[in-house]
Length: 197
Image (cartoon, rainbow, N blue to C red; front, top):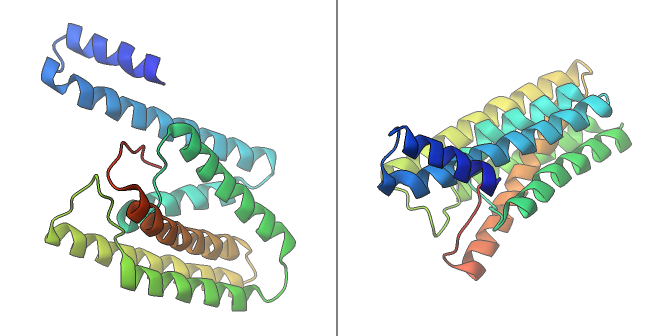
């Protein structure tokens, strides 16, 4: 990833697309985009191989739409980020395969837990990323709105006997767990170089 980002950054500099003072920012940005593409590709591939492609799309959609505003755990390296992101998806798939009864009850508990977490703690702020009061309020509002929306969708899907609803609830719950982990690691770690998960 670093080789790709260095190569592309050099090309941008050679073609005067960016100025030298923006080179490091460009390099980091390319690394983050590349890491996301790899993570998303792995999750989609797992979805195809396990015949859970819709579940993989749901997982990625919720990570993109809720987690980017709610905040939470961020890995120190891209490798750890990949393991956590893919690992959580694997756990969600496993739980979805194992549990067949009381889906509505589980989903209600998971959704309420996630909503309360968003209400109390979103957005989980990282020491390396300062947010203005306006951004904090906007992120909290968006986290709550998307959580309520997807939680409602999950319940409706379960009622009409679509198990994708349970995957939605599991993912929302996983995002809330990552928020708690993020709060703990942020307190312990202080400021450091962080790779977006």
